[in-house]
Length: 340
Image 1: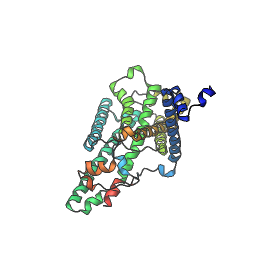
Image 2: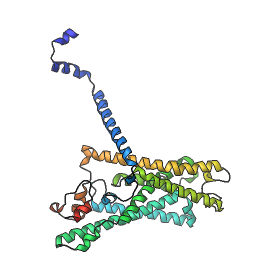
Image 3: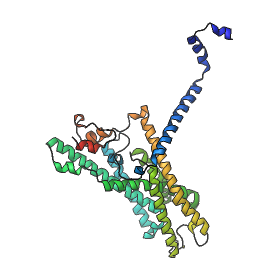
Image 4: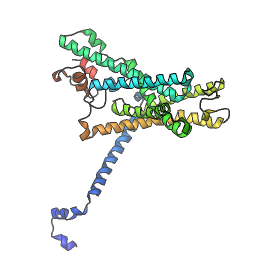
């Protein structure tokens, strides 16, 4: 064998052995390299997530809380926000009329759905505000200037912080409701349209919103989810101590949280949901965001991603490309416009 190969040059040896390498092996090696690279990147991002500045709710680029992640036409994106607001409000009104008592708000699933409604309301109002202000700024530029529009272009920090906070709570609570309900609470006689909607469709809505929008997700925000869980735990305990009843006249909110009959089970369940399940759902949402950004970074998909400067200052404002400011990757598009 060695003698047979001694007369072959290096190129011939490579050609000789090339057919021995299967395409499956090459694909496996390539996939392994990609997974290794993703793993290293994931580890690096994980370490960065637990820094103090990740905890705050003031976005350095406010447009990320307003715009889609994909190149969706602005009008279509505004209609999507409006449709989701009307859709969720309609279900909330139906739920209120069905129970005909404010006591339905003692249930965590109903509170979670109310958070979703408020989130869509705030998100729609913020987006509509941004569209109006961008159009105002564009009109001012065409007419030669009005300091009033330029001043109003500064994003409403408090409202955007509230939107980001609600986005985090809505996501964690929706996934938690779905997991806990279908594993611990669900019975076969509860399969109504309303029950399926607020215990299953809610998580689909959350997932779609996360994948379509540019909203960042930080692991540090799990503390907000845990805090919300602790507050609900306090409410459940106080509600039970005061002898209040649920909609069926029972002295508990959920049967699994009956502190009179099964105090240990009730305590473990409420603490597990508050301190384990809710924060874990934030971890799931964070990984879903990483998946979204990974898909966007793919070469074949990158052309479908949104260019924020063009989206805001051409498609939203109606200006021409020559008026689009050059945007620093770490700067906000609103800051770039104010500096023109």
